[in-house]
Image (tube, rainbow, N blue to C red; front, side):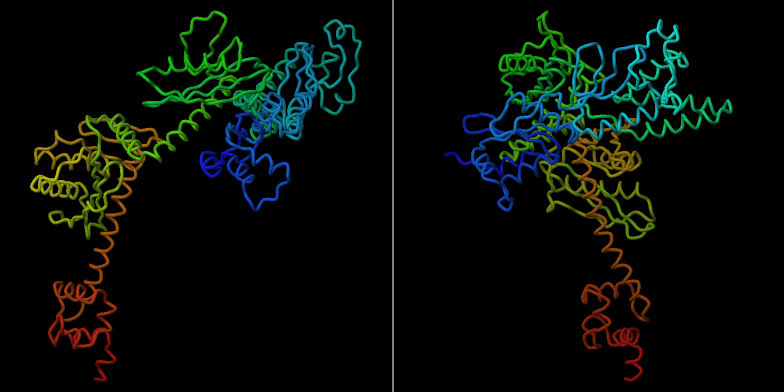
Length: 604
């Protein structure tokens, strides 16, 4: 029997909430599970230290493939697991009950609608929100609604005719302040329905508009000296602001739709498919498409849509996609959602396809490192508007301490990786005081004058750690050498990671997640590390030499000779006169001994 390498499978699974699926050697789905942390949960099945029963051991022995779907929360995973188990009925899963086991919040289709929870869905025009995998969450939401909005709980037929006839009397709920008495027309239907609309927005997660309106009413009440009303509104506002809306993996208003998303790169494309029936996700899969020609994302997505709908015999009339599709089929409606529940479904699909793409590319590039290098350099060339691949990049950084001990450092990256044997540092010779611009000008001039003299080859990209000033100084040196048109030079400013080009008034901003920016940041940080290390050594050596210069007869040159020979002041302090005379004359040796050991000198 073929052995399953679970260790390799685990490497592809993220530490995220989601649903995992186990498949056997015959490609049959045998188990579906949910997890707050997918990798930890799946890994526990294969941990020899974990106590598992005989049935689970049999299940583990049959696993030959693992697939998964990531979601936003653990509750989302719970709901998705439920719908997938009911759809596929895997052999090793406990059979779940029907949807009615999950509670829904209902806004009843009636005059002065009631809001309550139910496990039965009746198609009578009422609005159902849910289902709620957590009963406690649902009761928390209903408690919030009851505390914030006084609504009726009776089942009276509050028609306009019955109210005008005076058939009803207010009950104890009115006396307690839990209802405003619409049964006796103490509350208008317009005011009641306004509250219902706000509640719908809250349940659908559209809480920002409700809070904005409530805050305006609160401020108006305070301006009119109606502090009692302002206090009540403030209490409502605080309750709603702390409220977190329900899970949105499923929604009862979305029935029988297909959801597709695509993520592509140079040679491959990846398409994710979600099948939604009666408000729940019942099918999810991601496939890989290998590009043969220069196919567009629209062409590839059209191919995938046809393949998935055929594979799963889908006849959904609505298809949710990330962009418009030119598919001539009058029986299908393509939707490109911008907001709402459908947008959230598309976001979920896109999250899964992006993760699948990343895992596949990482796996391929791990086996073929040169592929990653080419892709990275190609992306950098595109992002930085270069005319050739930046195989050789050099980055400059300066360091000084209040103008003293100024140094410059250069680090070199080749094929996107540090080439430490090519790192260099410079003792600044022509600059006096803390002049960072002049220091940069000297370092760049000295570096590339030597490169030209030795004909070692110019880099394709030079990165300057600094903004416009440092960049202009570096460009000045390149012009003096006549190579300013031969290389691309940019500056990176630390505050907002702006990228500056010579002559451009405004900086360019790269995506904070882009690999190009990460390489530039790595160059900048490495140059800073290398430069500051050299600067500290020089500063420490200078500080020690200054201390030795306090000794009579010891000048700067002699102090440096002593440090070079003995390596530290401590060893100079402990040295005998005869040892010191290896470097200095007898008079100087006696002066050093007396300075560090005055008591001993007096005895002698």
